[in-house]
Length: 271
Ligand SMILES: [Zn+2]
Image (cartoon, rainbow, N blue to C red; front, side):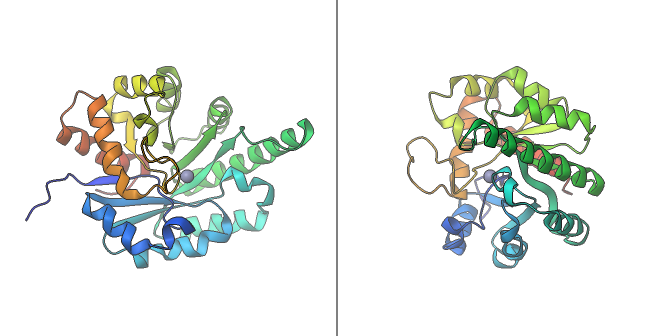
């Protein structure tokens, strides 16, 4: 019997983290049952890369893509040896389609101003180095941001980075969105749009060109409205999609088709 649900692509789901990995077959089956047929799993810390690189062997119910990189939360422990390993993997691991998740998190602070400044400088160095590696490997990037969109844009422009990618967990105004779209990025739309209080982001997502959008859960983080305090899962992507359908004027089929194609385009994946 043909499936009634259009295939959906979760472009940001941390399937390798303990909250999901403990019940991996269950989460994969639940996601596949609601139409999620492809998931991008971005890395967070180098210590988890080996497990990440083996994920594809354990998830035959759907297709797994990988992003490899060091999240800004681990900037203070990142080493040159890890960056060398990343560079090598980008050329030797066929499952790795992007560098991520990388970026800048300026909501993080140290015990005093000097420590906070040092932390931000360390993040800047790590982001800059990983962006350069992505450019050399010809791969797109998955961007993490908190209070850091101007700094991300400045570095992308300074390096004239042209591979694009996805601005994960987009929130903000139309002007903020277009600053990234103009540089070849798509915007990751997740559970944020299920919250009434996220009115600015909901208005922005309503008005943006359809070509700008991809879907994501950010599971196990970012539970949708009504699910606060629970572990988020990739099966919730169907609810994110429903929320987006309610905001947009296009038909369900047109939306699903465009989101799928946008995901392939952003991650430079073959059809
Ligand atoms: Zn993430």
